[in-house]
Each structure stands twice: as structure tokens, then as C-alpha cells.
Length: 335
Ligand code: NAD
Ligand code: WQD
Image (cartoon, rainbow, N blue to C red; front, side, top):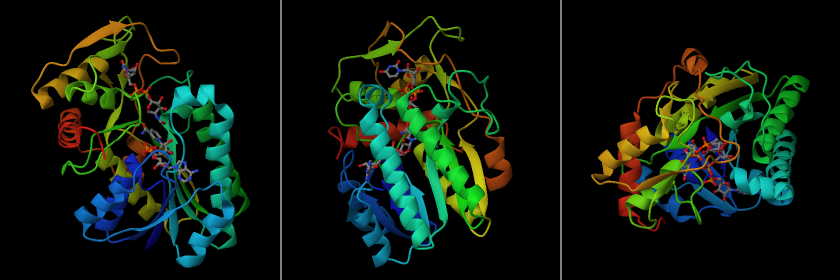
């Protein structure tokens, strides 16, 4: 198939472009490069042997999106493009709602007009909010507790309404847990701008000497070692999950929800130790106060994706850290 990947120059998008190409699909990318570099796509082409077609365009510009569809016979869309920093979304809610909602609405309107009614959407475990018990199941009531998460929840609602109104739509809502790691080649990986918000990119920058030490946000949670537990998923497993979801929905109209996680929690200190082992060095850290909004522990119930997609994670936290470290060591300043 010919797949349009929005946000394809970004972290998860670039790995997914590669997985799609390796599965035999043709790829067209739209990205405005607000949080990425076109270098990622050059390197994906180097790994796959086939360049993806790249359009630098903003989804909030509906005519630019329409022009891309006019130029290519697109069969399906994987929609990654969006802003994703929780803290920034609290400070700049309008910016987040505008980018993530208007961008998505433009994309869906163009798709509908042009008869492309197959979409895989990047949702997030953050939609489960504060009130659900772990492990999280797709059928639970959702309710995010920050503007970023609410943009994901709202797009899920829009897509569910669309699927209910028009039975031709094939829609997958993928709720990712905590993606980390990099392609094992060390050529593509996560390249955060500024101070990393997420744990593993921060640890990696300490390991490579760009930052002095890791601040561990809270050591007094009611968890086995007092630090928070999360469900870390290797980005290549996550990318392959998109290919599996796309295969499943093709020819099967409906609205599907799948958790993409390992089904297992790891603590901040466990991840730190795994990274130390991968990098072969001690990583200085200090336990500080809790970060506002953090939950003590959550992980996926990953059984639906296994049952429906025959997909499950295959890579361990050790492999995530080894691959993340190879990328960081070989690209100390990112792209
Ligand atoms: P990323 O920032 O690396 O990738 C997002 C890409 O979208 C970037 O290349 C950015 O330039 C592009 N983009 C943003 N707004 C755009 C717009 N208006 N028009 C065109 N391009 C635009 O982030 P990522 O980690 O690869 O995340 C991909 C998707 O997965 C996002 O929707 C994110 O919310 C979601 N997600 C990420 C995580 C995570 O922890 N990384 C977890 C759950 C869900
Ligand atoms: C993991 C753990 C921190 C940084 C976020 C988003 C979520 C989803 C995935 C997009 C927590 C601790 C972190 C640091 C630390 N993204 N930590 N020191 O918060 O589980 O999820 O990314 O959808 O929506 O909220 O991931 O990597 O930020 O944190 O101690 O410098 O590491 O407290 O326990 P989180 P994270």
C-alpha cells in the first residue's frame, strides 16, 4: 500500500517509516519539522534502500494537506504529527489544542473528501488518567489529566464519532505506553530539543556527558523501590505494532483500540541500572521531590493486541537501553 505518515520525521514516525518500507509499503511523509529534522528520513532511506517521499508541510494548513493527497494515491494514513510535551501543554494549552486538534481535523476532512478512510492514530496511555486501576485495559473509561492528554482523548472521540457515523472508516487508536530505545543500527533515534522531559533521553544525555546527573523525581512512592514504575516499550516493537494494526484494519471497517505496551512495569532505578550496564559506566543521580502529575505506577494489559494482531513486544529493557545508548554514543548531539 501507499501510506501517508504524518510526523514521519519524528522519533516514532521515523522508525515506523522504516518498518513500513521493510514490510513492502511505499511511504509519503508530511512533517513541518517543528520537533524533528529531515536528516532522520535521509538515514531511514540509507537503512531501507528506498527514500520516502517527503513534504514539508503543516497540518494546520488544510490546502497544503490537500495538495499532498492530490499528488499521491494514498491508501491509508498513520497519524503521528502532534505536540507531545505534557508540561508545555499545561503552560500553552491553546497552542496544543490548536496544533493537535485543528491539524487532525484538517487531515480527516481531506481524507474524507478524497475517499481515504483508513487511519492509525497515535494515542497515549496518558488517556487512562488518574482513576483507573493497573493494568490498563482498553475498555476502561478514559479521562486525561492534562491538556496534552486531553487532545489525545478528544481526537479519540472525534474518530469514534466518525466511525459511528460512516461505516466505511477503518480506525485504529493505538495507546502507547513509554517508548524508548532506538534502531539497533544506531543511525536513528530520539533527538529531544532542549532539556529532555522523558527519563531515558535524560539518562542518555547524562551518560554521554551533556548533563551532570539524573534527578529521580520521588523516592517515596508506594512501589517496591520507592520510584515510579512504567511500561517501557522498544520503539522498534512499537513501530512494528503499527504495521500489524494497519494490516488488521485493512478491509475491516470499525473503530479499534489497542494498548501497545509490554504488560510489565519497571522502576526508574531499574531503568537507570539497565542503562548503566549498557553504557558500562556509573550514572550519577539524586533523588529529589516528586514531579507534579506523576502517577506511582502503571502498565498495559497487552492481551488485546496479542489476540487481535498477533503482536507483542519482543525486546527487553536491557535491549532498549543498549540500543538507546548506541544511538546516543554515536550521535552525542543528536542529528
Ligand atoms: P516527535 O515530536 O518526535 O514526532 C512528532 C512529529 O510531528 C515531529 O516530527 C513534528 O515535527 C511533527 N509535527 C508536529 N506538529 C505538526 C504539524 N502541525 N504539522 C506537521 N507536522 C507536525 O514525537 P514522537 O515521540 O515521535 O511522537 C509521535 C506521536 O506519538 C505524537 O502524536 C505523540 O503525542 C504520540 N505519543 C508519543 C509518546 C512518547 O512518549 N514519545 C507516547 C505516546 C504517544
Ligand atoms: C518516566 C518516569 C518520572 C524524567 C510521559 C507522558 C506520557 C507519554 C510518555 C506521550 C516517571 C521519572 C523522568 C527525569 C525522572 N507521552 N523521571 N527524572 O511521565 O511516564 O510519560 O511520556 O504520550 O503522556 O506523560 O514518562 O519518561 O517523563 O517519566 O525521575 O528526569 O521517570 O517521574 O516516573 P511518563 P517520563
